[in-house]
Image (tube, rainbow over all chains, first blue to last red; front, side, top):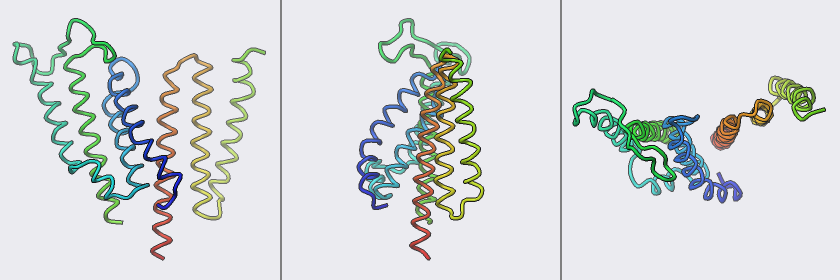
Length: 136
Length: 91
């Protein structure tokens, strides 16, 4: 679309929405939020950018096919599930570090599982939307 | 009249009434663009109701939901206008 306001707004909205999605992702263990909603907000950021500037520009920002994110997210989620088995605990048991990290809070295997969900949601949504946009 | 009473007895009924009026416009809207604008306004009123409700129940978590709701509504309007423009070009 050839609207100056929307185009310049999308330039500022992309980093802001990505930051907000990471905030939602990190907060999601005890409060509303989590990997799924964070991933949806991150993909909304890219979709708004692609609606304003065209699909090719967004592709050049992403640098790789969004399907790669799907694979990376599944790998992260799988390793967060496997990691307790190295110290003799059952599959997918929640492991937590003793002390909270500043800004992020408590870090455990559940957080890495959520990061995996985040990446998978971004990959799936962007693959679907880009394919639909191409065919129209 | 306290703030809670004011919100519950005046602001919420006004928002509910406006949602009804906008819904009528959404149903009878002559063209597709009228309906898209009505849908956007409908979600904006919903965001207002969530904000009022979050003040009334003293739960700040609802505000994040209102924010994401407004974001998705904006995306919906953008997508509708994008495809409307594409359809006009094709015809």
